[in-house]
Image 1 (cartoon, rainbow, N blue to C red):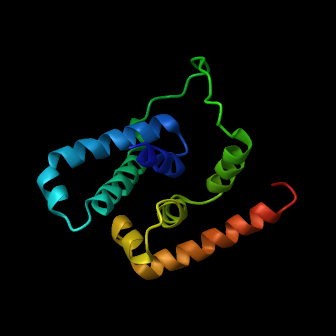
Image 2: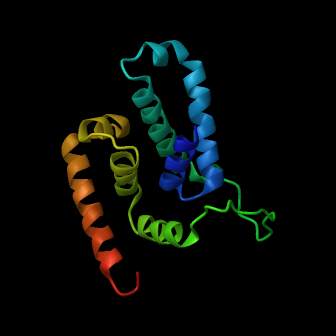
Length: 147
C-alpha cells in the first residue's frame, strides 16, 4: 500500500492528492474484487486502476479543495532525505502529466512498455516516445548548472 502511495505521489506531486487517489483505487478494487482476484496479475491490474484513478483526478481538478497557508506541524521520519526528494520533485514537475505518468510507471513501478501502455490506455509507441522525450528533458535538466 505504501508503494502505491509513493507512486501516486510521484504522479500527483501532492501527498493529499496521492492519498485520495490511493483511496479511490482501494474502493474500486473492493467494488471489483472478484475481477481483480481472477486476473492473471492482480498487482498489475491494481496498478492500472491506480494510474486511471490519477488520470480521472487530473480531469476533475475543479473539485479539489483550495490550499491553506496554515499547515499542521509534524515531524519528518529520520530517514527522510529532503534534498534528494526535492530535486526529484523539481525534475518531475518539469514534465507534463502524460510524460510523468509514463516515467513513474516505467521506472518507479518497473512496468514494461506494454504494461504501461495498457495501464494508461495508450499505444506502446506513445509510451516509447513519451519515455524518450521525458528522459531527454530530465537528463538535460539534471545536468544543467541550476539543478
